[in-house]
Every structure is written in C-alpha cells, then in structure tokens.
Image (cartoon, rainbow, N blue to C red; front, top):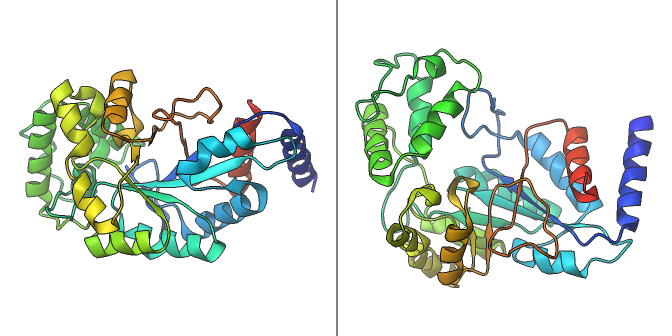
Length: 315
C-alpha cells in the first residue's frame, strides 16, 4: 500500500509540472513462453506482462501514435497526462499474432517499423540464425569461417550475455563482411526464415496502426558510406508502401543507432520522424529525426512504472 501511495503521489506531482515531454517505448518480440535476456538476443516479453504494461499506459498516460508524439509533448499543459508512444521493430510474427490483438483490445495506437523482408524478396535476419546456431546442442565447430577470430565458445556454454557481445561484433562489421557472416549462418543452420508477409503487413495497416520503415537489410547505418547510406534509406521502401498504400514517413534506425550524418540522410530521404534507441524523452528541442526510445523490458510491472515516471520527471 505504501508503494502504491508513493507511486500515486509521484505521478500526481509530475502531472502538475510544466514540463513539455513525452516518451516513446520500443518493443520487439511479444509472446509465450517468456524469453531470457541473458541468453537470447531478442527474448520474448511474456503476454501477461505485456498486457499489464498496456493497461498501465492506458490508465496513466496519453497514448498517441508515434507520429503525433512531438506535437503532443509540445501541447501538454500542467495537469495533463504525459504523452507516450508505443513502437515495435523488426518483421516478427508476434506483431500480428500477439501484439496487435492486445493493442486492439485495449484501444491503443502503435507503430510497427518493418523491413519488408518478405515483400518482393526473402531476406532472413542474421541474428535469428545466429541464435539458432548457438542454441543447437551440436554447435560445432565453434568458429565461423567468415569471421574466424570470433570465439563462440562462451555463447554456446550459455555464459550470461556472451551471445550479445558476439552479436555486437557482427553488427559492427562492414556491410560486405556482415553479409558474408549472414550467408554462412544461413547455410549452417538451414533455417527457413519467417518474416511478415505482404498480407500480414496489410493486416496491421488495415487495423489502423502506423507503419514505418526499418530498412531492408538492417545494416548498422553508421558503418555505411554516403552512397550506401542513401540506398539503405530507400531500398525496399516502395514495396512496403505499395502494400500499405501510403508513403512511409517514419523510420526506426536499425539497432537503434544513428548520428548526425545518418539523421541528415533520413531527412533527405523524406522521413518526417525517425527513432533511435537512446534512453531519452522527447522535449521541445528534440530533433524529429533523432527521437529517443526506451526499451520496454521484461521487468516487474512496478519497475516498468518507476522507469517511466522517473524518465518523465527528469530524474
């Protein structure tokens, strides 16, 4: 009871503030069984926990479409609930099977940032193949021919967070080398990729959710030269636009990372808003092409509540 009362007082005090701010949240895979972030690159956020988070957002905040977040923050007055936007990255079947139905039940808007991997061509996601390789009990040899100095032993032994360290090494490779690693991973695991189809994307758009672009090849954009960066901003975009029958004006940077050069490339490509994964609120001075997002993690709901409240109070 004491914790509940303190939370109520903190939120009431924050609402009285004149702060013009808002928060964007980013989700990835949602569903059951819940995953383990120590050993999985994209662990599932359990369905029950996801529903609890949505309920708290609906009851406590002004949930707006991501394209409206900056305006909603600027329009906020003392006493108003803070605006929050809900976003999802990657082409995951749980977007259609779990996340969208839960959002529709609670009446909340959201945006899905998609690569369009299965629209016009099939591209798997290297990190899913990497996860499959590490999880296999017969993961031998423990080296990749395309990246021989990457030791997979710790990840295969399930040393906590070792898989994340190895994946970050692959993520930062130059595009040609990363493609070579991706090709070897695909060959090694022989896994049939599962990406959202055009029909799946159409279902999300028809339900009223915003659809944004996440780039076709999901390169770490800061590793690209200017020509490749320009290509990444548009390659595959038209295919997704043809499905949703509208221009894609919002973008989420792959791996949540961007710098000034990348943001300017997004601006030049005609995006109105673009999202990073920096743990930052939106404010009047926020660059619309560098909007931060907070990762919605698999933590007890009370911790989720505290994280949001602390972020919006400026703590």
